[in-house]
Structure formats: C-alpha cells, structure tokens
Length: 265
Image (cartoon, rainbow, N blue to C red; front, top):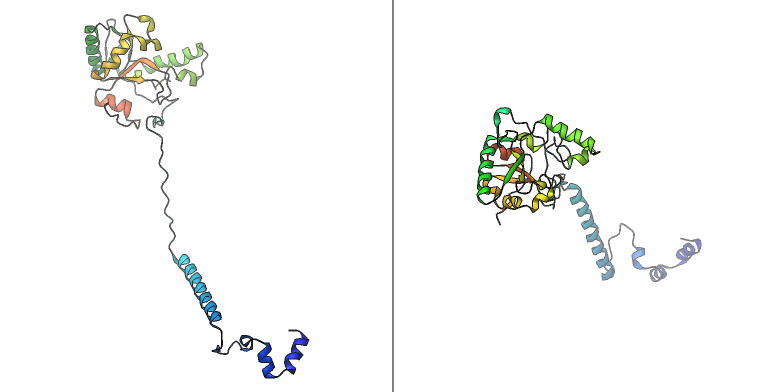
C-alpha cells in the first residue's frame, strides 16, 4: 500500500472507509464471514473446496493403490505353422536335423545286388509297394537307401569341393554328415525304370512313377521328404521318400519338429 493511500485511509471516517473499500477486504482473516457476503462468492468458494478435496483424494488413492508388477504376456505369433521354421532341433546344421546311424543288424537288402538297403520294417513295405506298382505297369527302382556317416562325408565335402560349393550351397542338395535321413535306414531314393535319365533329377516329377507315388505312397507309409518350398530350405527332391510307418520312424522324423496335424481333404 502506497503512502498516499495510507494517509487517505487514516484521514477518512469509518463511513467513508465502508464506502471506498469492499466489505470483504475490511474483514480480518480470523473474523467470521458476514451475512452480507454475496451468494456467488460463497458458491465459488464451495466449488473450489470440492475440487481441491477431490484432487487430494485422487492422489492418495493413486499412491496407495497396489502396482501391477506382473509381466504382461508376450503377443502370440501370427505365423502359420506351415510357413514358420519348425526345425527346433538345436543340433541341426544348415536346415538338416541330426540323425543316428542305423546298425548293420537293423538293415536288409532291397535289390538284387544287395547294395541298396533299408530297415526291415521299411524294406517290407517298400517291396510291397514295388510289387503293386508293377501290377499297374509302373517300375519303381531303388537307387539309394541306407548311407553311413562316413559315406556322407565323402558326398558332402569331396563332391562339394569338386563342384566349388560352399557348405551352405552344398547343404541345399546334400545333407552334412550325421544329418542325412539316409543314416536312419528309413529313406530311399526312387527312380522310374522306364526313364532312368530322370534319376535324381527334378524331371522325375514328370514320370509315371512319381505320379503313382503321389497317389499311392501313403498307403505304404512313405512320404516325400523335401517337397517344393519345404521349411528346411532343402532343394526340391521328388525322388527322395521316407518311411514313417512305425513308432520309431515316426519319432525319428517328427519328434524334433512342431508340425501340426493336417486334416484329410
């Protein structure tokens, strides 16, 4: 308050002070509110008090409320099982699973010279399949069956070096040693006796033998190992089939993969 206003207040009479200064300013902080206070002022004060109390209550509730420290669930993948890499075997190399080598006691010959061999359970089904195919005019010829890890080493490293292929390039057409389905004694490469030029070639898919296999191989518990665009990234091999007709063969090829059942069309 400036000096001029102070002198003016001191020289004024009580009635003059009442006229120049609003009544609310003349009340001391400890004085009870006058009945003369205007209703709008009381309303504003009441609303303000309610707002302040609500804000304080909200802060207290927020501070006292237990915090949710539980870890939120991760979003589920929307990738289809048919397209995602389901190869969960930690011992896989370049898309090929690790397989145990069948013993000599577990394999038997399936051709005349005895060079092509399979496990006994697979051999019986294969021989029946060959017989039934022949009755339909189809000549299924076994090209390669059981293969030892030592034999696979030569195919992978020596042939790969001769063809100037890196391991990754070689793995697209031949499994690394210890990771070939042929080690199991359940896999067999099949050709068409009528057109041997298509052996171990993608042209085999154009033969009558391949078409017969597509229509009938499942009846004998054989399936194509590496179809087009397979999840392992192995080159398409229409000639390479595997037996999955007993518990051991099924677990050998499927236990390490999270492959879902496929409904019958």
